[in-house]
Image 1 (cartoon, helix red, strand yellow):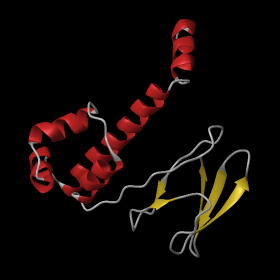
Image 2 (cartoon, rainbow, N blue to C red):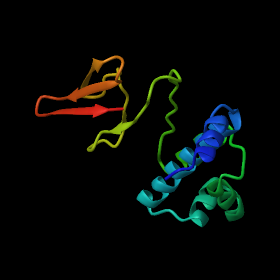
Image 3 (cartoon, rainbow, N blue to C red):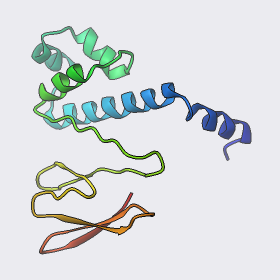
Image 4 (cartoon, helix red, strand yellow):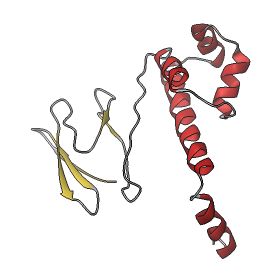
Length: 140
C-alpha cells in the first residue's frame, strides 16, 4: 500500500513542469524503443542512420538529453515512423488506439480510414470506434 507521505509528494510533483517534461521524455523514449524493436534496428544502426554516435543514441534512450521537436522527428523518421503529438485539457484523460492493420493512431473525434468515432459520454471520455464489421468501445 502506498504511504500517505508518498501520495502527497506525488501530488506535489504533478504540479511541476519538470514532472510533465520527464513524463513526455519517458513516453517518447519508450515509443522509440518499441519502434526500434519492431524494425529490428539496434542503437548502433540507428546511430548510423542518424549520422551520429552510438553514445548519443544511448543518451537519448536513457532520457538524459533534452529533445527538440526536430531531433524527435529525425529519430522517428530514421526508423520509418511518424511522430504524433497530442494536446488535451488537463481534466481529460487521453489514450491512443492503433489501427491493427495500419498501425496508425486512432484519435478520438478524428475520423480514420474506414473507422468512425462517436463520443459516448463527454464526461467519461468514452468513444465508440466502429467500421462496417465490428464495433469497439474504448474508455480513455
